[in-house]
Image 1 (tube, one colour):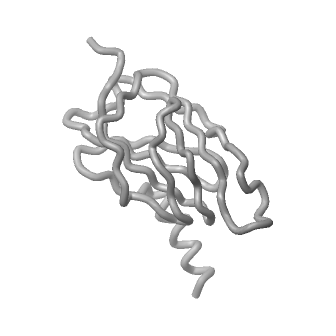
Image 2 (image 1 turned 120 degrees about the horizontal axis):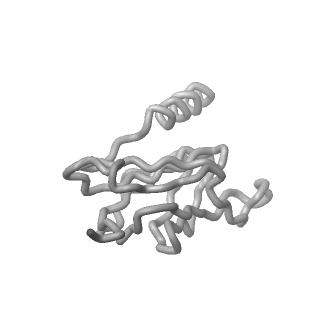
Image 3 (image 1 turned 90 degrees about the vertical axis):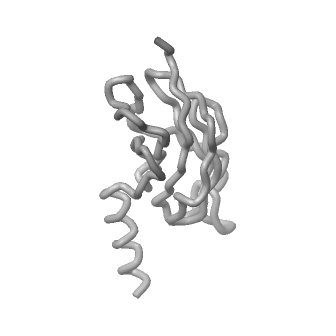
Length: 128
């Protein structure tokens, strides 16, 4: 059995600012605008089973706090064979404003997470 899996990766950001240089285990998986994602796919990413390292750089208008800072996901991320459903072809990487992240698996293009939907709904409420 292989110690890795090959998946297409879809990035979702639920942050109120752009992010760039998003790296999963050192492999660039893209960038996202504020509250963006789901539109770009990195195909054929080889992902090892076990602990995952996810980092990203914060962007935004000049003067925004932490601009250019590299953030490492505060929560532990890991992928085991048991958690990958059969027929999974996609990994959703979901980045949240509290510097945490979530990994989801899907046979087809991943959807936003319930937590992400809640963050987006709150952001839209503030705009109205």
